Length: 268
Image (cartoon, rainbow, N blue to C red; front, side, top):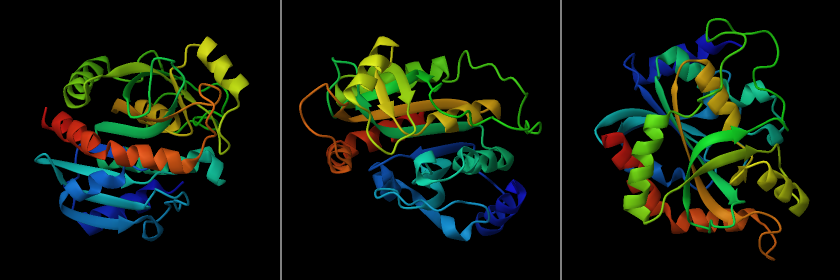
């Protein structure tokens, strides 16, 4: 993949001083865009090598600007395996960020609650993940310029940063969850049996993104933080049928808390 072509294009548009922090905004969480100052917006379709985001609630744009007096680069919308892309295409921007010099990444997502103590509107800091049901994003020839063939995944999500953002979440929303995120390929929501199995395996929330990005970011030497917005309870937890509309409605309800959490975290 020609990452350098995308790197050169972005530098040409926004200048050579690239932020050290990247943010990936999940389903319904693009509201953070309105808080970014002095922003330059690049549509994905104009960036060499970038896929096109096809999911409602994902705007499909790269934003470079300032948030909480920090220079940031944000993906307003991401790419998913279920959209038909090869898994390596879904993480193309993360590799580009690495070559741009990004050192820290904040991954956000909308997730289904598996833990019976959770409720829609909660925020969960990811401390580990399950991904063995899906194809590895590192499958194939290793890209040695980014990392080693067999990267250690003992601590994908930085422990010190987990403590920091968890304290901010508790301050902003009253309760802060911390748990394991299970990555499933989608696009169908999971069955009740699959959710029971994931709960038995130790999962607290489930979703269709984030983990490939986290693995590639870790492989590239970035410091990773991930936050899930629990937008619905997973299949079988309650009687309601699942829908993407519910995901967007819950994300919209907690959008102000979400913005404050990310802004205060960046300040620290």
